[in-house]
Structure formats: C-alpha cells, structure tokens
Image (cartoon, rainbow, N blue to C red; front, side, top):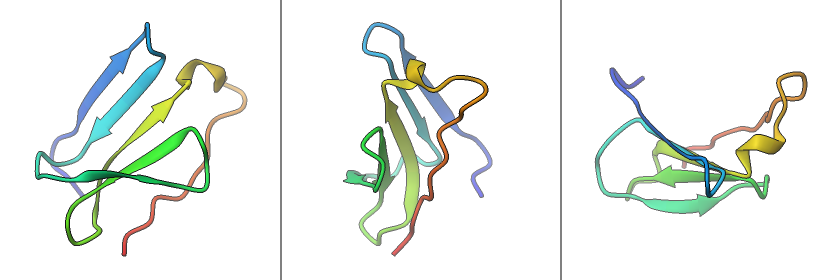
Length: 69
C-alpha cells in the first residue's frame, strides 16, 4: 500500500484521478466504462481515474475491481 496518494478533481470535466505512485505508467480500460486503471510497465496498479464522477451518488457508489497482472 502506498504511503501517500495524490488526488486531482476537475469539476468542469467531471473527472477524478488518484495516484499511488509517481512512476511512469499508462491508462488501461476496465470492465466499467467510467473507470480506468493506471498501471506501471509490470502491470501493477499505481492509480485510477473516474470519468463522470458526479453521476455516482452517495447511496449508489461505484464498485469495481482493480486488477494487477
């Protein structure tokens, strides 16, 4: 588990990004259209992003699995 996380929220774009590490990585699609994983070269999850974050209400959260290769 990361000691620190970085969180960015862009209200205009309705986009949230969370990073567990600053190492180089790339975005990878998940089974949920709203969620993208950020993985490093070895496939380890180093963050995630959510598009359309405002559509997820308090009583109906986004639930998804982040996978590591």
